[in-house]
Length: 193
Length: 211
Image (cartoon, rainbow over the protein chains, first blue to last red):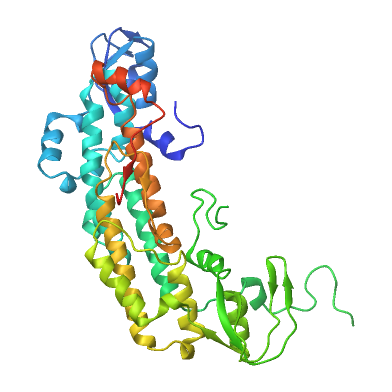
């Protein structure tokens, strides 16, 4: 379970992952689109959202497979050129999901793979973020996962705020309420005759 | 003390940092006579014509706007001094030169309000801009060395505004690295795992700019 109020954590748990049922289950046919009866057979492979897969795993009703975004193919691509890999299309919560899934599948290499991927992609974000205060590279941004793009945005907005401050402009802003004209006769008091 | 503008990240905006910088003392030469001012932070004055006196920057700017004084630029804002600093910054790629903590904000305020008091205004302005760019580039190249083993970053002689610019990025990056480097995620070999447990409170700290 994640932080109760963290919206990203909640959305992340919706990510589908592939599980195979260890037991047959009756009355839950809607989980398996290919099933003809109203039940899931033993050994059936079904895509379930992470929160459900996690609960089934704890009850030993299903075993979790390694999601495709941590496959050997992705690892090869990350090794070749980490910055150019489109991780968002694989999973917008690539790192968060990886952290959650790793203990379930018992794959010890996911942790170090995630760290390697983040460390090598972080450098690219660093060099682009502060320089991109005014002109942002739209293509690159679409490759970033949720976590990376919030990192990128944090750097970009702080640099932009500094540039704005340095360029000057009106130093004191008028509160919006001061600009309004007072309207006579509005409210509870009717205008006197 | 945290900034008021963003409760989540507790960062300052640039104008908030400027506000803090206005407490720095500068020397002014008044052209009027006035009693001493008794403030909570101390007494300033009395003000006599042509007698230099130290006041906070906000007071200096307020008096300057009314034409009651001339501001003496701080000694580090001279062309010779800044040229030295700029060359030293370029020559030493691994450390920052000591400059006033609020040098960016002070220079900006003086350029805006007291430009007639600064000799060689354009030269000084472009030198400060150069120094800032060189230093920021150093910060960026230094941050590239952050890796999973980094738990803290030491930045010596970095100024308020420079820290403020990189703060949101660095905080998030360090948090992410910390999360990915947690022991549950990375399985340590047995030998080093037992060694690490002894020094668990002495996590390695990376000097961004080791002396």
